[in-house]
Amino acid sequence: MYRKIMFFLKEWKESEHRKPLILQGARQVGKTYSLLEFGRTNYENVAYFNFETNPKLSETFAENVSPDYLIPILSHIAGQTIVKEKTLIIFDEVQLCERALTSLKYFCEDAPDYHIIAAGSLLGVAVNRTRFSFPVGKVDMKTLYPMDMEEFLLALGENALAEQIKSCFQTDTPMPSALHDAAMQLYRQYLVVGGMPECVLQFAQTKDYILVRHTQDTILAGYLNDMSKYNNGNEIKKTRLAYDNITVQLSKKNTRFQYKLIKKGGRASEFENAIEWLCLSGIVSQVFKVEQVKKPLENYRAIDAFKIYVSDLGLLAAKKNLDANDILYMVEEMNDFKGGLAENYVNVQLSINGYQTYYWESERGAEIDFIIQREGRLIPIEVKSADNTKAKSLKVYMDAYKPAYAIKLSARNFGFDDGKKTVPLYAAFCI
Image (tube, rainbow, N blue to C red; front, side, top):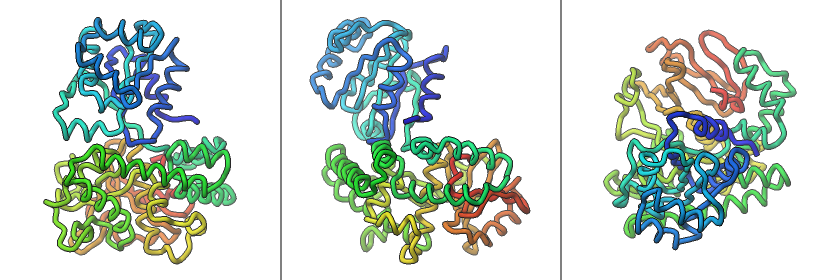
């Protein structure tokens, strides 16, 4: 299956300023597969080292972390000669070996001709919670997310449809109605399946939602296991409580996160470490409110007002135990959850495209779901789960801030009218 990360990795390989690369991301998003595939197609050989499946590896780094010392030993362990610029060295689950992470600094300074990538699922947690000596300034960093809507379409063989969607987005031209309906159906399938590569592959091969759900449940169990394995003892229960509650809060009319909904009398001081853990692990992301819409947006964020979205739609559906048909047909019983589900979907697509997302509220309660900086401009984005796109809040915002244009995401076809770019939900990946 095609992953867009391949384009980035090829650019990294060819760069004159290449440093050792750290690829981070939540578990099961496809880091190992992507790196092995990249190595297979772009190098003469791959030397792969996994600190989880081979715990003794750490002993090698405990003695000495200089490249001159490490390379002959690693060549012996890998059973193949590691050659400068011709071998891709992969350190997997590097968060389990602090010294391996430290060694990247010396590869950067003393042996830059070796091509080396370290991957870790809970690197953010490890670096923030332990005594890790992080090689600041000596590494390149990249985050891999679940597959986006475009990668999902390509995995299902819908290449021509993906190209048509991108073309209509650029020109604000409506899709032919039959293709629009087909794309909306694929969007709803993506809400059920999500972007975890194993789930997408299973769905592409079998179209079996029950099989996909079993895999999603296994991934969720792995996340719960991580919360126990990589967390302080007294934080485990709080982290699980917070994670369970995030999906509940997405069903509320106001999706702003409230600590008191985790448990009666819940406070930030009790749960903020748990929220931080979930964010650092890549399982969820925080979207902060901005009090003023000015550049840089980060300067105007309200630290105590935020929403939380999960990183994968399929896992969200599994966590809520939503029936596939209920999502595919958007049944009425789901009305309270449709808005939060659509918002979460859009946040995932925007995050994958590298946007830092924020939201805005007026003093009288008008709310804009997302504010992003796109092509140097601050652009408001309104999200509706259906084709009813009357957006009073958007008018309030546009009157106040006069943006170059606004984006309205809904079930409606492409168009542009009165300063508003109408984009169907399935095309959020184009933004």
